[in-house]
Image 1 (cartoon, one colour):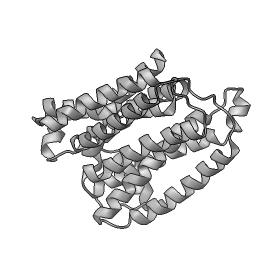
Image 2 (cartoon, one colour):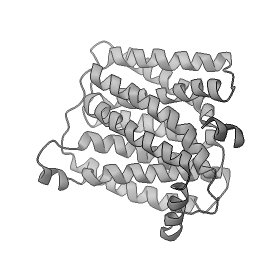
Image 3 (cartoon, one colour):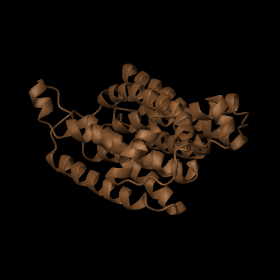
Image 4 (tube, rainbow, N blue to C red):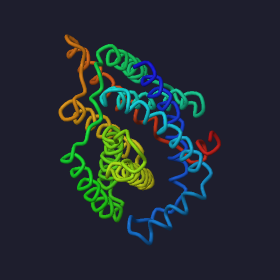
Length: 286
């Protein structure tokens, strides 16, 4: 439990720093990119020429390594809520690097996330065992196809609703990463290579990363990030408890639910600190 929680919090620090860099890099790419094959290659190539985006990519990859450890050791509801602490990191960085000031409500949100994570850590029981679940695996594959198709359609519009939809799809993609990580089986290399979740995990992550970058590129970071945080937190938590056997300590169900709600609400309040208000200001900060 201690190792898993430490890994989740370490990942949160890296994700929190990467969020600002990803926003800076994404917004320097022309907004005409769409999620078809030809323009996707151009879009990714343009992103990879942005130093801030490359920094975000490195930090996100390192953060995912820690997050993967947390996903294997913790119930999904705790592992995913731990990642919400990345918004606290981003908010505190904003006060240092961008001269932002936290209001009383936002300081309350910081405290709420910390208290919520504490309650979840105390309330958490054993993580469900990694197990073959063919129905869930098929659902993941179908879900990824739907996310890619809907993402391609949404990327053709610059309407604010397209930004929100891309955020929703990115959140579902990141939820697929968490669920795939839990479904991965320990075994030989041959067994690992033969498992569909070995492939749904990186595909989910890459698709979510691209969709979130497209969302950041097209509109308000708050509008893109709020649904992403909500979906990537709630979806795996529900799947973990209802399908994969994640447990809560006896007598602590109210504490677990209260901690999850506190963490989620606090994270959503802090979403605005993912935003980069002025391109020149964050570029200098980065």
